[in-house]
Length: 192
Image 1 (cartoon, rainbow, N blue to C red):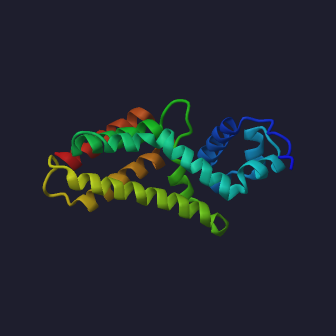
Image 2: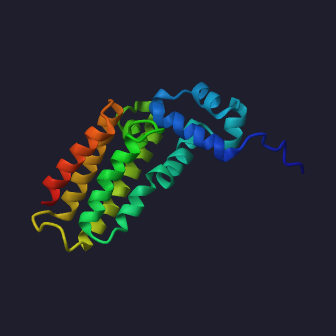
Image 3: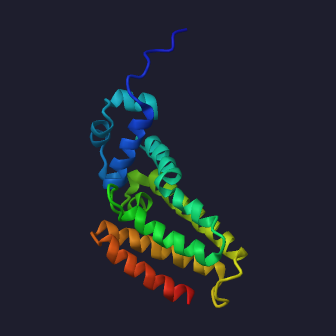
């Protein structure tokens, strides 16, 4: 039985372009026309290769977490709890206010601006955020160098809150230098 026509486009390149479109405009702000234009394919090719918009977003979210968002896993492997938190805060700044990337965070944008038709994307973005916070809490439970006044679950939630705030501020136009000053102040408040 024939397998159909071979794809005439690079799937990885198309996913990268879809990632950028979703990252710039958020899930709901990105139409199918935006996606097909960015990806350089037509709608039938999008559906055949990636499924519907929700399924494409799921693939893009995984690509984001394993690509630009990989700094989180790297930070969790730092030697000390202090280094973990510093790398997470600085990584959030670099990711969300970096040169050549959309400003803001794909997950935060999706969680903030999601109506009923974006339920699956919202759920997936929230799940990714929660999984990151759980992983951070577990790592902080192992740390012996952090101030004893901090309970790991609350500290993990606070670090995520600061990171999310950084992403919102980056999307609103704050410069990397401004965010670095804000992040450093947050680190002193958390760790001193």
